[in-house]
Every structure is written in C-alpha cells, then in structure tokens.
Image (cartoon, rainbow, N blue to C red):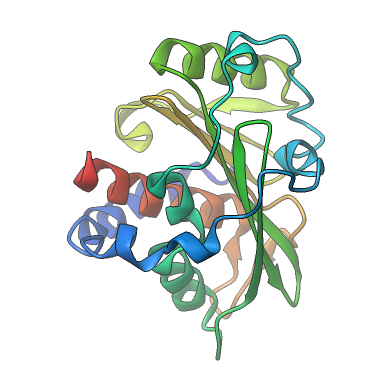
Length: 208
C-alpha cells in the first residue's frame, strides 16, 4: 500500500498532459503497425499474473488490426513521459507486436523491459468482461478508486502493473520486469506504471 500516495500525487501531472496529445495519432504512422502474423508472445506480455483468458466473448469476434488509439502506446506521449521521469539521454528502443487483439509495445530499458499493451475488444461490454477476468486472476490486485481511477475501472498489482478499462480498450502498463525503484528520483515502478497509464488515457480522452 506504500504506493498509494504517489498515485494520487500523479493526478496533477496527468491534468497537464491533457493539452499535449493533439498530434499523437499522426505521430504513430502506419509503418509502425506490425504484421498480422506477429509472434504469439504478445499474450504473455500481459504478465504472468494476468494469465490467459481463453474463451472470452471478444476472442470470437477479434479485432483484425490495431487502431491508431492503441498504437499511441508506442507514440510520442508515453515515450516523452518515460524519458522525462527517468531522465534518459535518449529514447529507449521499442518493439511492438499485434496478436490476439492485443497491441503490445515493449520499451527496452537498461533496468529491464517495460510492456504497455492494449487489448481491443469489439465493444465496451466485452472489454469490461476481459478486464474483470484479468483482475480476478491477478495476484495481489488492488482496485484503484476515487479520483485516482480518473473515472475508469482500474486496478494495480504489487509487482508494478496498472490496468485501466476505457470504452472497448483494456490498457495495461506492466513494469514488473523493472526494479522496485528507478530513475534519479527513485520513483517506484507502481507510480511509473500509473503515470504512463494516465498519460495514455489523457490522450484517449482528448481524441474521443
């Protein structure tokens, strides 16, 4: 529970980000879209605590390709936020994939890998069903409530993941592969996951 305060403290930062997403969709060009036969490793990028969710309604009507909104997780906004928080000299290398209706962007940091993924469901109800299944299977899941949730269903895990459901999207920032604290200010991986989540959500809100 020690990471609760940094989450709330991040709200002011998130509010500022609302004005910085105007060019986000254009900055993630079609060239970034991976092939449809991408490695089946994408589902495992959800993290071991998330597990596999076979048989969900969304799988029967899978989304054929990632939307521009989903590809924002590999765009300028989360990249800029990440490099600012960790005071990086250059942008980290990223690799993205598309499989099982999930777009995953992996940021390769010196300390380890950071995975940001978006599960695209056919509709909001299917997305919420998927979110509920993830939360039920996650270990040490704690709901993010009140102002910190920004009005969306959300939870976090003790090992550094934040998951939000908005419309037909389920966003997961998985920092479990990183140390418990990192960067010059010693930010916790939970706070990092939360701040990156709210950066992306701010862009989605602005473009919706």
